[in-house]
Image 1: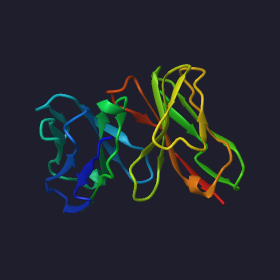
Image 2: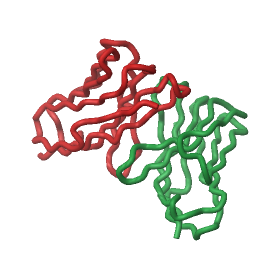
Image 3: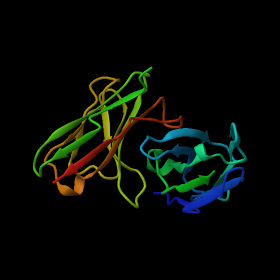
Length: 113
Length: 112
């Protein structure tokens, strides 16, 4: 079963700052990587699903990259806004475990106005 | 579209009681799953289904049953509630395994 690590655990930034988080996973048995955004008192919402080494995806001010050979993905937020405050979860699909999602603990982002 | 509808939103049970958490989706998704969220832990998979009539165990299946008689519905049954089942439960659905998952609003369950 994949072991997923996300860093940092939490992050406080000022409005307008750009920031990034890391998701690390074993490169063996990798199939795909999911990123989700989870606001307090709401449900997780999908940001990206990435499968190929070198993949880059973008949605507005948020982008992500994927390195399957070394087992990591970066999530970037450009010009953070208070509404970006949330927990960002990554979840690789474990090809050795029926491709189930293995969830990280997330990075909690707080953007101060 | 309603998306994934999960009920109830809150529930308090006494130890030993049984109940069913309902989950329905209107997106014709084949893949549905139930997770629990506990403090300090990532989402943990309880049971999942890859289509009507097919279910399988996840990481923490003990004490829970599921069935998938239709594509739309995937109820989760607690057979005899225990305090260890106090948690927030999420139902999710997706078109297939490597597509984005859509989550229900969550059920906060307390077992006393």
